[in-house]
Image 1 (spheres, rainbow, N blue to C red):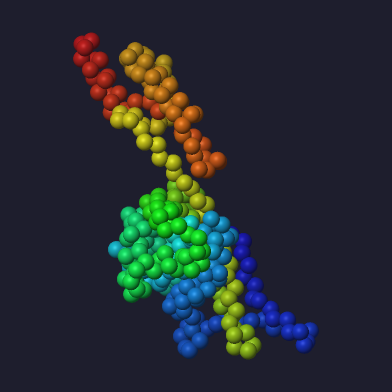
Image 2: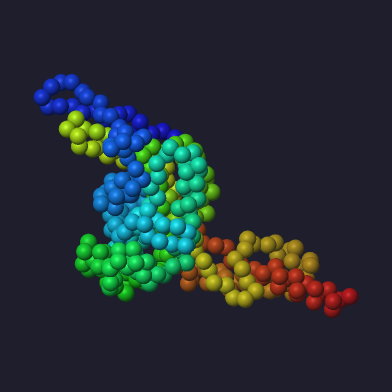
Length: 304
């Protein structure tokens, strides 16, 4: 994977020389970068996470709280867009190899847990986290976008949670190859509803003591949305079977297969609407194998 590791150069206007900036100390001391520091930085300045480069759908999220409690653990940063799309952030330093191996599975556990939630669950936990009454989640979103409709926002948030439509961000001071390899594996096997991004957040010291944050995206997955079709009892969406093979086993099964084929062809062509124009439509279904086996047994019994 190609990426930029060069140290930023400061070019003073008063001279022609260039001064390379130094990384903030990462191994203790008063200037050390901690996970809590990164967590606070992401919460107070969400623009430091290059979200638009990972998935533009989640651009400009509203930071809601840190340390949001779930059954799977505390989410470092929880954000949400005015359209009801959740963003989960896990902040890590990369000194511990064990932490590097576990961080991806940890944020996936958070996503799995939140996929069982509704907007009411999020509101409850945000109230507990912020120790505020009312609906601070909606209040904070409306502070950014006053036109947000409460019912539409709650419905969208619940739907996105249940569908697993998240942006998962792993933000660290210096991500290593081990974690990048995991992200590449996810991208190659991305049977996922969510987007996942790895963001490196090196922090440099300016000559006057100020700090310069230079975020960069190291890896990201693509968002894949699964379209679920509710099929009648005994039917599933499967690859086509050869009608000739069915007719050799049982002539009645071939007729049933043709009937199912016509039903699904009409449904898929005339009624099914997909929100992703590039998503291919499934093939028409035939009878579930369990039902087929039962009918085959009945056919065999009648002719034995």
